[in-house]
Image (cartoon, rainbow, N blue to C red; front, side, top):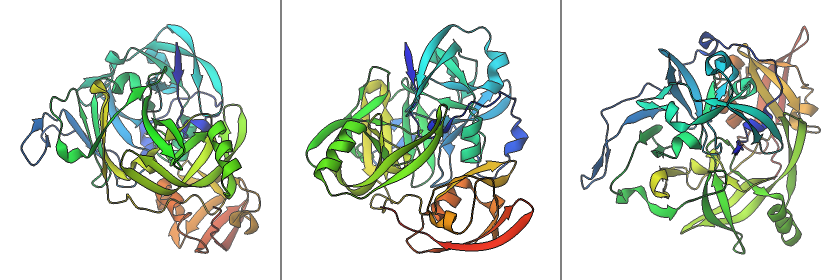
Length: 403
């Protein structure tokens, strides 16, 4: 049995020493709020399906984190349809007991062998995670540092497959149901989803009008998506596209991948233009793509519903600064800087601490807000105060659009 964890966030896992993470290290005002039991799925005609649990999240926030209750304490797990297994962080290792087996876990760039365990009696709203079968245990500290918020686990498909899930990005609302008896016609266009050999949901798409392929739907990836290397190279051989390189840190080291702006993607009657895809091992559609819609997953019935959201026509952009940032002990730390990028030319180096951005204390920014600012627009001026060793410097640079 193999479990696949293909979130782009997971691609930055490093081999860190396991340690217990305390909840008070991650205090913030934008936590997913506690479950509500009163609001129903309800269309204009009055068709109802009982809403079992509801969460709210900040519009634009990525990744999506949901509160999970274990032994009276609340932890935050990332919603990840791109992971076949539900994952518990190493802080739960002493609770998980004896391992059941060894399995291969794959990321976007490599693989590792990990132990599996019986799931703990933890709860997502009223739903027990023990019903998902075996789970894995990984060190998720790097995910926490990248997100700037606690990530104590991943809610994977072995839990989600039994549920109906609706994500309303316009209003920052997520609803989780056990079953759904009737379709709501206001949910948009219906698609049949298939599940690959690893149990991950897939939807059919058409790239550039001549490449028909399946895309894995991956809420654990914060990017628009990836195309497998064969398709990516086929497109480059036929289209005159500008490419750029991105850098990620993985369990096996630093990995570079190409990115390109793809002129056209179609899914059913939906048409998308100028989306940015990275080269990878698989085809997937991530959170930046999914957030263009109201999306309803009816996993038990192999259906997905898509409806245009407020950001359906948004322009897809990637980082324009060259900065790769982490939040460490509530400081914004430069993990690495792309060679020749605006940030590199301004003198920012790995290990520097960002003190202020645009006159605001850097530690007051949510990480996803800061990253959006750093792709705001070509030639937009960014001002920063940085700390390099014991020296403080005021700097500025102009964002540069790469593709």
